[in-house]
Image (cartoon, rainbow, N blue to C red; front, side):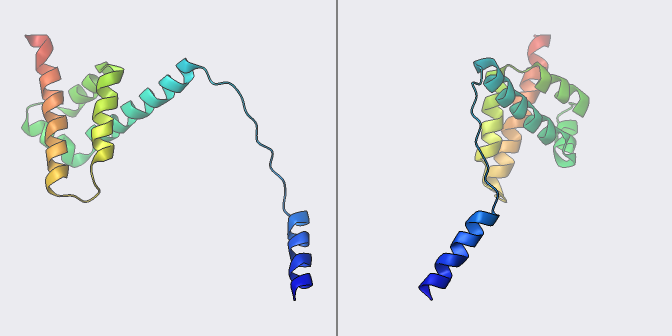
Length: 116
């Protein structure tokens, strides 16, 4: 039994393809750009949702203006808000609404700030 198992392992090892890893240097600008773009895309997806768009309308901010404000955010602001969205537990009622209100209030504050 043991020899049959060993033979099976040898055949499986011979039949499976080998994959070689390749390593390379990644510049800081490439690493930072990738994460900031991902954060902005996450925020744009969040703002593009229908329930979020209706909440924005109730605050007097249309979805196009919110999208422009997300594009105008600094990398720190985008990272912070995307982190808040990521840290929200899935399906949570109270905290989900709280984070939605925080994000919408922030977008509303950013929309009014240049007018002041």
